[in-house]
Image (cartoon, rainbow, N blue to C red; front, side, top):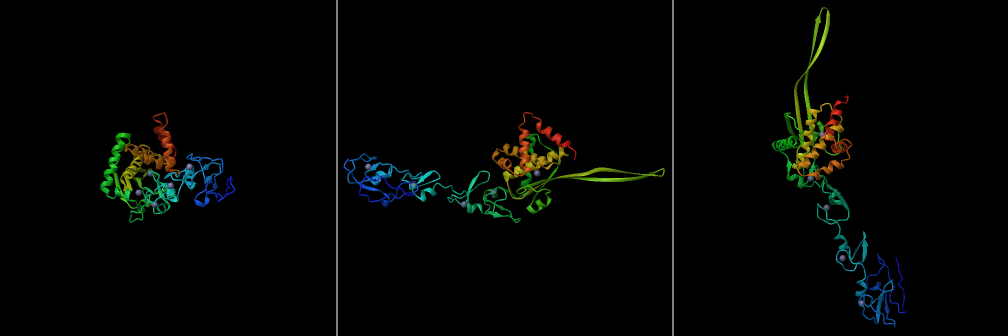
Length: 350
Ligand SMILES: [Zn+2]
Ligand SMILES: [Zn+2]
Ligand SMILES: [Zn+2]
Ligand SMILES: [Zn+2]
Ligand SMILES: [Zn+2]
C-alpha cells in the first residue's frame, strides 16, 4: 500500500510510505512541511504552528511528531502508538502482540497455534498437543507409562486406582449411592478385578470409539440333562435345563483416576441392574446408553456434572447416541417413561 500526502507546500521533505493501517512510522515516513503564512494551529495541542510541521492524510496539522502520534491507534497492550493491527486489535510490537496469545496449560509457553482439549477445554500449544495422550483425560500423558503401554498425566496419576481393595471399596460406595439415591440396586454377589489393557480388550465383545475402561460380565452355568425312556416299545427323550450357578463380574482397567473410576463403576453397575430387571434387552445401544445415562447421574450426585460433557459430545453411535436417547426419554413429562421404554425393549423378540 502506498499513499501520497496532500501537499500544501512546495518544500516537500518526505512522502508518506504506507504502513499496515495506512499511516506512517519512523522518521523517514513523516511528511514534514514548512509553515504557511496563515499561522495554523496544531490539531492536538492547539499551539500555533511555526517552521516545520506535519500534516496527515486527512488534512490535520501537528506541531510535532509527538502530537501526531497521539492521534494514532494505541497498542491494545501497552497503550503506546500502534504500528500494525492483527485480529481486530492494534499493537506496537510483536512482543505486545505475543503477550495476548494464550498460555499453553501444559508447558506454560504463549502460542498462537494449538488446540483446546479435555473436559476443561484447556489450551495446548502444538508441541504439547503432539505428545502422547493420557489414557484417561486425553491431556499430554508425559508423567509416566504403564507396562501395558498406556500413558498417564500427572494429575490423573495422583488418584490412580491400582489396588484391588481400594477398587472394591470405591465400587461398593458407588453401588450404595445408586441404591439410595437412584433406587437402582441388586443383591448380586459381584466379583471385582483390576486388569491391564490387553486382558480387558480380550474380554470385550464389541468395539467402541476410544478406550474401554471397564466391563460387566454375567455368566450362567446351565446343566442340561437328557433322559431317554422306553415304554411299550416307544422311545421318548426329554431334556431338562437347570441353572447351576451364576457369576457377576466387573473388570476395571487398572490406573483409572478416582473420579473417573466412580463413573466407570456406575456404568458397569448399571449393566448389572439391567441384567437383573430387564434381562432380555440385547440391543447394544440400549444397554450402553442406559449405563452411560446412569453414570451421568452418578457424576451429578458427586457434584461433577462437567464430566458429562464427554458423554454429551461422544460421537460413538452406541455409547454417545445411546446416552442422548436415554437423556431425552428421561426429560419426558411422564415420570415412568424410562421404565416403560425398558419394558418395551425387554419384550421385543430376540
Ligand atoms: Zn502539538
Ligand atoms: Zn505495545
Ligand atoms: Zn505447550
Ligand atoms: Zn490425565
Ligand atoms: Zn458398558
